Image (cartoon, rainbow, N blue to C red):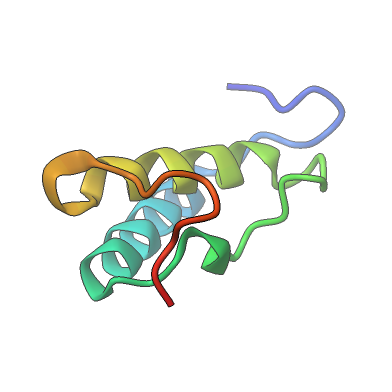
Length: 71
């Protein structure tokens, strides 16, 4: 997996991103807590993996509609 202008994340970095996302979803944290900046070419893949894992880990696999996240 390449990141275009960025770098290829290591297997350990990808695993850590997945663990972090599952933990955030389980604790009910909003998606905005993603620790990876999608604007940074070096973190785009990690941000994408984090968000996809977060959504998959949500209860009932349902993300809140945009603008309606609970506080």
